[in-house]
Image (cartoon, rainbow, N blue to C red; front, side, top):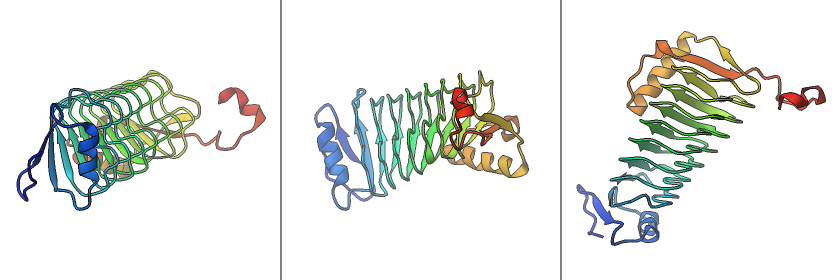
Length: 232
């Protein structure tokens, strides 16, 4: 690693440094404000567990669980990511310029996850307050058991969107293959258009808010009733 400077990035080459060493350096007290990670080559667990207002730029594809459990930090992946990007994120911002595999933003409580490409199945599964903006399409069972937060999909959504949804809000511009249990289409009002415009701007993704449809919970499955057993 090169010595950190105030105005230049701390360079870490994963061809020479292990992910464990990188993460340990990022977890140190008062880490440098700007980092650039070279040669990630699909490595897993890059930039996990950060808890400082730093910016980490990953120059290439990352593997599983990149930027998981993030707090405060901004992580930018200049490529694709594997399963579980930004899983259980609490705050901060994670940007993926390419595509994401399954379970992007799973269980995340806060912050913003922006995926400029497509996301695979279960995007936003059990989301608990995170905002997720996807420039392309998402796979099946996205926002399954979503409890809070917003999922914006500029492309299409696969089967069973929003299955068993609680209070997370979903916006989709393209075609929805099917809705999951208790997920229904809802009216798009002025406040939703403003919310969409703000989320798209934060994510750096261009789209017309007027082209989106809104989905949410019908609130018929909040409490278990035996007569609804077949609907779960």
